[in-house]
Image 1 (cartoon, rainbow, N blue to C red):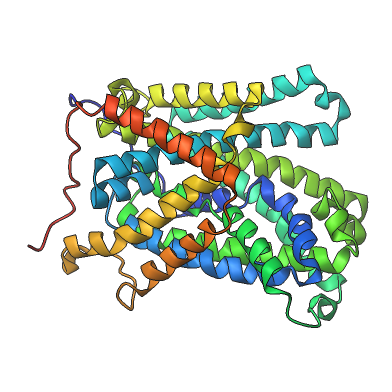
Image 2: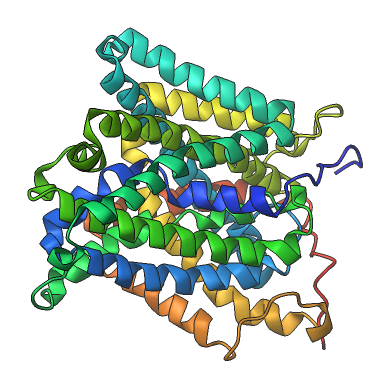
Length: 437
């Protein structure tokens, strides 16, 4: 690919952490308390402990893998360098499909929350306008510069965390925490089921690994941003569940668990505050996806695995402008057509695939990198990557046939695209990697 303008490194440690937090705390947090309570009852907080522990194990492998690169791509890049271009492309392709489906679903959730605030906005025409406006505005900001995209992510992270922190702080003093403690250990089967649901929901921290080419000191700061984000997110989600269990006797039946719980101890103003938090949360998560999604397209194209125009950088704005337009257009089409529902099952398979490959890649990347070049190395040898692999394999046991079928279709489509692009220029090896042999 011809030399030309490069991406700008302007995202700092705080912005990087905000990207990871936005990936985890999205629209799902506003319905998860009821979903998990429906499976596990009042013992539901225990599922957050189990799922949180597994999520941390996987996140630690992402932290070390990210410390070896300062280029865009995240899980795609790790898999490609460790296992070759085919595996890398499959991981990148599935990651991309999952993000497209996720962004389209969240845009619809955003419109639904607006409709909750003003019923007139729930009408089909108004709903379509809201979805189009949200995606177009966020895409325009990311087109105009990564500074704007990152700033929006930072602002919306604060806008959604502040109401949730108020909810937890007031809620913990308004309930009898002792009543939340289960009288006996819950049965293993529902605990496993609830933990599986949560482990998928607690993903998203890996978003921070994708735009590394625009991060200041990415190899140094990405590991810490990842660990801080997952620790903060798991803790906050656990505390929210505790408050919801203590405040709502019939939590499992609630369609708006956080808003309904807030109304118990904050009144109607509290419910309105949580509705506003939901709007900020959905917008914040989509602002993150519309930042990282184009960077993944850019990385795949820069590696010769997607058409070259997707890797072009705008000479003035220094953004992958073609990739931004393509990703936003595809998201909007899926959101308005409703076809994202078909792709929703890909999220589970995609997350399983890149969790497995990233954990497995860590020992390989570590062996290829001289000790003096490493910036973050997990202790105890390969223990944490192995535990991450086991946690990911545990997820596989919870897949249903529909998810497996959709995942297989996605992988086969990716394989066909890979074969079509096989004659493209070879992938360059990251210059930071130095083999000790």
